[in-house]
Each structure stands twice: as C-alpha cells, then as structure tokens.
Length: 80
Length: 390
Image 1 (cartoon, rainbow over the protein chains, first blue to last red):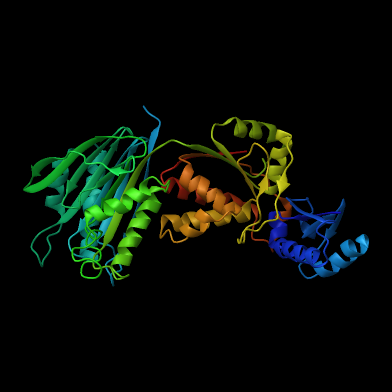
Image 2: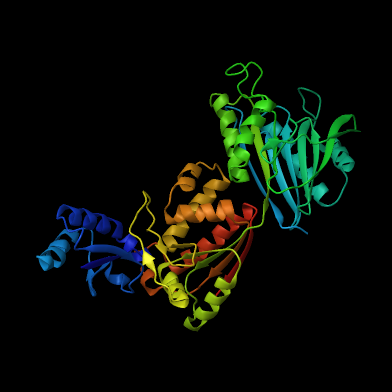
C-alpha cells in the first residue's frame, strides 16, 4: 500500500508535518513498515482540502486531529 | 579582465556600555570590479568616536572612488574633522583597501594594526612604502590579487583583546594571524571570517569589550553563477520558454515551489521525488529531480531564507544553524550566501488560487515582496543579482 502526504506550502501550514510524524509513529507501532510505503509529494492541486493524503490513488483530507481515525479506517482496516 | 571577484564582510562590537560604535566601515563600489573599503577607528569611544570615524570613512571612500589622491583625502579630513575638546586633536585612524579591476589591491594604512594578508593558507608579508602626508606617517602597498587571498583589516580593539585578562599584552597580531590562517582556507565567507574573529575578540574581553573592535575581511575568489527558479509563469504557455532559459544557464540550479518543480520535472521528463525528512526544522522537506541541484518548497522556505539573510547582514547569529542543517532553507542559504557570486532569479508571477485564502500567510503579494527583499539582501552581500519575471 502506498500512502502519500502532501508537503506543499498550503498543506504544510495546515499541519502535514504532524500528519507525517503521526503516521510514521502509527505505522511503526503496528509493525506495518513492510506493507505501507509512506512518501511525500508536492501540491496535489486540492489545497482547500488539506492536508491532502492519498492512499494508492484515492485522495483524503486529513488533519492532525483526525489522523488517528484516518489511519484506523483507511490503512489498518484495509490491510487486515 | 579575469574571472576573480571579491567577497567583503565585516563585523563590529561596541565598547562595553556604548550604544554607538567608534569604528566605521564604508564600502563604495566604483564600478563592477573596483571598490574602495575604508575601516576607520575614531579617537575614544561613543558618539564622538562614531562621528569621527563615520566622517573619515565616508570622506575617504567617496573621494577615492572618484579618483582623488590619498594626499587630497588626508588634507580634507584634517581640515574637516571636529577637534576633540579633551585632547585638542582631530583624530581617526584608517585602513583603506582599494580594489582595482579585481586585479590589484592598494592598501593605504594609517595607525591601525597592519592589515593581514593570508595567501595559500599562510601569512604573506607584503611590502609597504612609508609616506608622510601632513605630518602623518602612512604606509602604502600595492598587491596583485590571487585566488584565495584573504585580507584582514582591523581596528586596534582586536589586538588589545584580553589585555590584563587572558594576556599581558593582548591578543597580538601574530596570534591573530595563526588564528586566521587556520580558518582562511576552510571555505568560509568574508562575513563569517570576520564574525569568527570578532567573536573571539569579544570572548577574550570576557564579553565586556574594553574598546570598539572591528574586523573587515576581503576574500578573493572565482566567480560562481547560480540560478534560482521561483514560481510558475503567469501565462501557462510561457512554461517552456522559462524552463529552457533557466536550464540553459551556466552554474547550479535551485528550484523553489511545489508546482514549479512539478513543471520542471515534466520539462526534464524526470520523476519528482519529495522526501518526508523534516531535519529538525520548521520548513517543509526538500525533493529531488535528477539534474537539479536543489528542489524545495516555495514561500515558507524562501521566507526562512530571507530571515537568515537579514540576520547574516546584521549580527550573523544564526550562522551555526543554517550552515550545519540540511533542510531546504539552510541548503539554499549555503548555496546563495557562501557559494554564489552571481545569482539569476527566474520568478514566475502566476497566482496560486489556493494561496489567496485570507487565513494563509502566503498570498501573491507576499511572494513578490520576498523576491524583492531577498535580492536586496543578496546585493548587500556583494552579489550580482539579475531578476527576470515571467
């Protein structure tokens, strides 16, 4: 599974750093380093909905507050 | 005409308790390849010394840059300077470094510690001719410049550092030479070299300088062009033209901005890979495109570069931060402040609709302002700047 977080200006200001760090933490905690490839990308063109995160080719709008739930529903559940 | 150029930087600290510095450095550019640098140290400290040294350096630099002789300059100063009511003399010592066509340095020195020249990492004893002008003993030298030459001019506050604290006779010129020899070849800029020297002086004074102290460093180096692309063009059809102009230029290439780097990657037909390493910094991570020296995010990164540039020109206190770190802004600083001498900006005026949100501090006018401010700072660092808008 490929998870890509936008690190462009707009998403950065909306907290992509916290999103990346929490995802890294959650992926490590759940021992998913081999099945999830976490990467960055510049602007996805949907700045209004930042922080933009894509899982394979599907886009999601995530905030530092919702990242835990996002991880559960879109990554953990999909993998198990 | 050669391909040498000079990097000039200086730093002063004030006599403890004084708000003004009694030393003054004035730099006048005669033309692209010639300039006059004057370091003057006014008698005493505080307001009086500051006025004396400012007048002296301004008068000399302006007159010399307009081709008048040193004799005329000295006479003018003697006739102009206000006379000190305590000591009954008008007095300001000075060191002049006159760089001519980036080929020759003419040194004219009056009563300051003799300027140091470090060539190939070693102290170089240059010849000096003694002249008498208006009862003043003045030393004059003419030195052919070589790549890597480092000139260090200073006020007597430097060798007096530590008298009675760490050293009986202060930090002597030979000690300063040894200190600078170790640093001269390490690739530091003139500003950084002068900062290291003056910071050391400040430490030797125990943070309470007993005199104003100034070091002015001139470093002779080869020209190094650098190109920086910032923002997509306002008209989409100009992308190809902007990219081909940018990539055809000699020197390193830096790209700032997410959309901009996407356009560049498409033009080069190479993948754009963004990293998620934050490198202990508050700016977004960098990215990679094969064939481009550095790819970073745009406004936030450039804003950080600007704050580093402003600091570099004043106290240079954040040097340790940007010279060591590997985040986008620090890497840009290392390339622009330390490596480049000629910088070409390629600025796109496209408006990013997502940025025109009043909640975000990154709108279009801020972007244009950033370019203006940054190029002003870089010019002040002595770099040649060309800005093209698309």
